[in-house]
Amino acid sequence: MRKPVIKLSSLTAQRIAAGEVIERPHSVVRELMDNAVDSGASRIDVHLEQGGIDSIRVIDNGHGMTAEDLALCCESHATSKITSIEDLDALETLGFRGEALSSIAACADISITSGTSEGACHILKAGGSRNISITPGGNTVGSVVEVRRLFYEIPGRKKFLHSPQAEGNSCRKVFLDKALPFPNIQFRFFSNHELKLFFPPGSLSQRVLQAYGHLADSSLMKEMEYDSEVLSMTGIISSPSLYRSDRSYIHIFVNNRRVSEYSLVQAVVQGYNEVLPGGAFPYCFLFLRLPPDIVDFNIHPAKKEIRFRGQREIHHQVTTAIRQWLGTKKTPQVFSQSQEVSEAPSWFPEVTSSANRAPAAPSNWYREALPLKDAKGTVSHGMEDDGFIYLGQIFNLFLVVQRGDALYIIDQHAAHERIIYDEISSGTSVQPLLVPISFTVEQEIHEFLESHGDLYRDAGIEISAGKNRTWEIIAVPAVCRGIESDLVELIAESAGDPEQIKVKLFAMVSCRAAVKDGEPLDPVSARELIKKTFGLPFPRCPHGRPVWKEITREQLFKDVHRILSGTPDRRNSSSGSPDQMK
Image 1 (cartoon, rainbow, N blue to C red):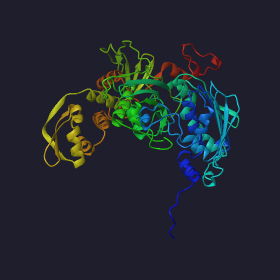
Image 2 (tube, rainbow, N blue to C red):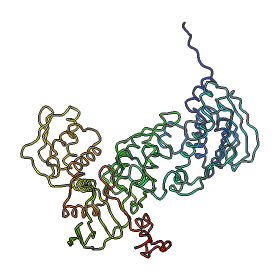
Image 3 (cartoon, rainbow, N blue to C red):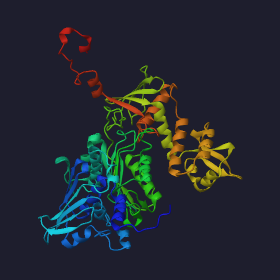
Image 4 (tube, one colour):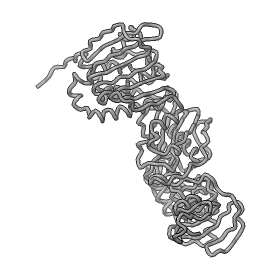
């Protein structure tokens, strides 16, 4: 049956439009907190009743509104943030469309008490029926916005609300996202009249640890700064000793907004890919500041998505900055001509009490020139720069070494992998092949090699193009002899991000060329490997695994219940137990 075209009533249209902005109680919290921050407030309180289903109240001490402002604030597209479309190119505020209060008033009862430092205070009341009243009252400088009975006139929306606890948890997450980028503002979060979160003003590191410090050892979270012509960045990021099995705590903020941007999350993951094992992800709270004219938040009513120009450049700078800070890349190669990265801290302490923490590099390396001995006691000399005692190989994989007041168990394969990786990353001798190796690639790979063949030359692999998508390997580094077929397979299948391909190439070559698990090492080879291992600037294999396990003398004594001073434990000396005797 044909139905005629009609024009919806303004109230129906507003309620439909409001559904794009106000989905659940957390949407109200998001919009009201944006307005509170934009008002210049130094204190913001959020109160929920029944997870926000019954009531949401946001209190701020910002600039406030006059009676004239209140008369317009709940109208569609009424805003103090912009006056023309051109203003979007210089946007510094969180809100700008003028849809928040209008959308809330279309699907709930709303009350606003607001006043400025220069004038009287007034109270606005509005609701789903769009009846608006403004009366003098209150003594507020700033604003108190209360929203009640969300979706009470839209039962089709209300029935999809979750339990008060679930809705309250969603509101709490939004509260954290809004509080993190503004450590200069005091925030408090109340649920059913009980204070749940209190964030006094402080530094960005303090704010992140106030919000999320309970999840991990805060001593393993450090602050990173980075500045360039394109962006400035502050990161509160974890040591490689602390990681998770998912990406859920990689939080990205752009111009003070939490964003869901996969490319930036990937940039963080790639920054860590040389220091974390496969399937492990860091804790990272990254705050980016970009020129407003290259960022567009106006592509989704709830500002969930962003679009920005120069995405590849920004991705590259984020990855490079993290790698440099972690110590895996000494000189950042970025598109900008001017950049600074804060110095990474002296390496983080080892934590071994949690299953998801890998051992970090030691904070101190002992430099005593000790004589060298193999497992049979034979003494040799000549390593005055790095003294150690080689005790032997166990399980045909681990080299056991005493160095100063610590015992090191070195994974020979992981250590050799890292040594080779660093050598080929910094350039290595190239050997021409007597007979070039020919192979044919798909058109996509052929085009990629034509544009990015230099990435293989940087690794010491010389390739040359022939006819009909045929290529040849004509020279390889010495460490690649014998693994040419693996190189062909990698080259013939790799297209995409050149930086990632280079990392994958170096890691593959290192793994194939390194001494293997189960391969016995003679004492001379073992000592040479140990010497190079202790000289590594970053003792993790290219796949992120630590190359050694350190056991300090203090820890060993503690584990076997010995007294570190060397004096015997005489608490049970009368028993004559061998365990109590030196």
